[in-house]
Length: 387
Image (cartoon, rainbow, N blue to C red; front, side, top):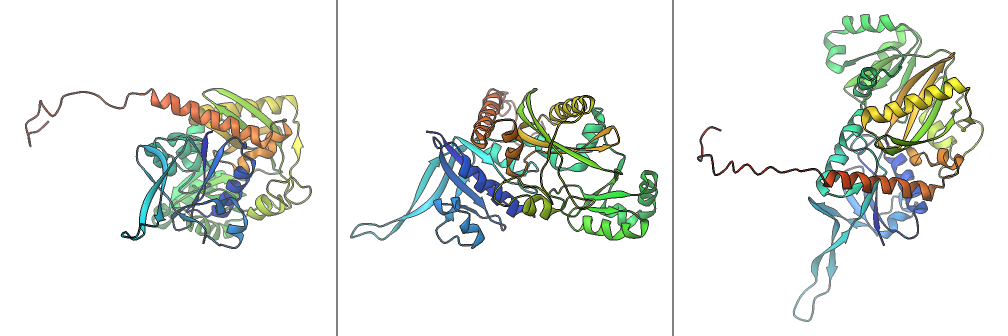
C-alpha cells in the first residue's frame, strides 16, 4: 500500500484556500492509499495526526490531537517524537517514529508553497511530489517572470508593464509614463499573489495611487495590464507532463463585478467543497467557436511547454471581441480544478491517481540524472592553495 502525504495550509494569505483543497484531496483519495496529513500552520510549524483529516479541526482551530512532525534531508520519511512509558527503573522516553512517504500531494497555494520554495525543500527531501518542479513553480507564481517567459515564446498577452517598490518611490514619473502608454482602464496586480488578493481595476488616473499602494502592501513588484473591455474570461485545465497533455472542458466564470473577487471564487461558488452552483460566482461550461477553441488549446499547450509544467494546472484566458489573450497559469489550482475534469468524465479520485503517477514519473526522470563528478580535486590541491 502506497503512503501518500497531503501537504496543505502554509505561510500564505491563501492559507484557508489551501486547507479546503487539502481536505478535499484527503476525502477523495483512492482508499487503497494510506493517507498522511501534513498541515503547515500560518507560523510555519508542521503538524501531523489523524485529526487533521477532519475539517472541523480547522473550523474550530482545535489542534489538541495533532503533533509536530519533521523531515530529514535525503530521507523520504516523515518523523515525529512519541512518548513511550519506561519500565520500573526508567522514566518516560521520547522515541522517534518514522513514516515512509511514497509521494507528496502538494496542496499548498501561494507564497511559500506554490512559488518554488517548498518544491526546493521537497527536492532535498528526495520524495516524489505533485505539481511543477522548482523552475516551473517560480515562473508560474511570479507574474513578471511568467509574462516575460510567455512573451519570449510568442504567446499572445495584453499590453503590460511592471515596476518595483523602489521605482514607484524614486522614479515615479518614469513609471507613470510607461503606464500612460498602456492607457486606462488598467488592472493593477501584486506580482506573486493569486486568488484576486490585492488586485484592483483602475478606470481613472486619480485612483491609480491607491491601487498601487494596495498591491505594494502584498508584494515588492507590481504588474500593470491593459484592462480588457467587454471582458470574457475563459479557463481550462491541463493535465500531464513532458508534452503529453490532456485538456479539460472550458469554463466561463460568472461575476457581478468587473473583477472576480476572492469571495466569489471560494465562498459563493462553493456551497460545499467544490460543489458547482449557478448565479453569483457560479461556473458555466462553454464550447467556444472552433477557431477560439483551437487558439485556447494551442496556447494552453504552449504555456505548459514554456514552464515545463507538470501535474494539473489551470490556465486563465481573456477574450476581447474575437481576440484571445493568455492571462496566467495557475500551477496549483484550488481544488485541483477537479470540477473541470468531472465535466470530462474523470472523477476526482481518478484525477488524483493521474497526478500521483505524473509525480512518480518525474521523480524517476530526476533519479537518472548524475549529481556528482569524481574529480579527485582534493588530492590534486594543497591545503590553502589557490585552485
